[in-house]
Image 1: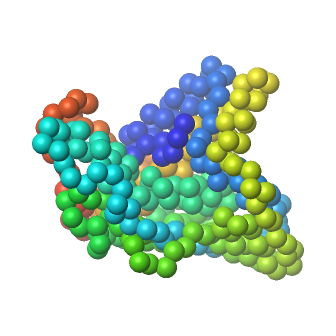
Image 2: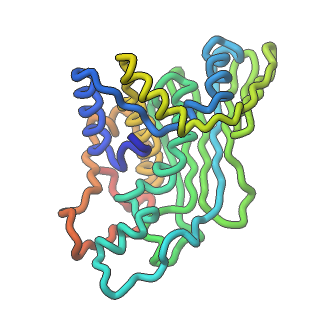
Length: 286
């Protein structure tokens, strides 16, 4: 099951129902959040969970990258319906990609959920559309900033963007009572009383995840990551919802009560009005 598992709370609840059904049938679901299978992250996270930096008291998650301005075909062809045009530009339509915080940065937020053993309790976010303002960039934002609160009042600051010309970054930091941990694609560095480093062994986690799934099926092991990827997807979705509306929200509300459903009226080639770009403070929280 590739990430994200959904783009709205209604879709996430459907995925969780499917994951529960898979459990009852003894079926295997592996999630495409492959950072959980990068060797240095696996070793580093085990050390963190074993107390290498003590009790977690804070964190930071940053992913700043290019604007994807050259992605896909930018000019609509005369024979394309609204639906076909949006499908061909899916990366820039919230109903198709979830916006980049959901479509791409779910990987980084999934690492934070991994560290804390589950999703955050609540969040408040902001964001906007400063560079990708042309019509061919649909209705997504190009920058987000979200404060997530995990159990025991622990705050994690997320910052993400898709803009050309900015300083690139892609890393996570965790602060504990006995030290701190820093991780990027190169490795994990633990500082403090139990200082150590873990380097990536260069094994492709995208291949590892499929090997894990095949082995689980062959050996009859129970391996179901459906709920996990759904919860991490909703972590990203609630950050987007908060930034789009300017409203703080709780994870439980998003999971159990939000009625936001971004599905089009019909899955057919034809007319399909594009939803307007969100305006914080004006766009309704649904």
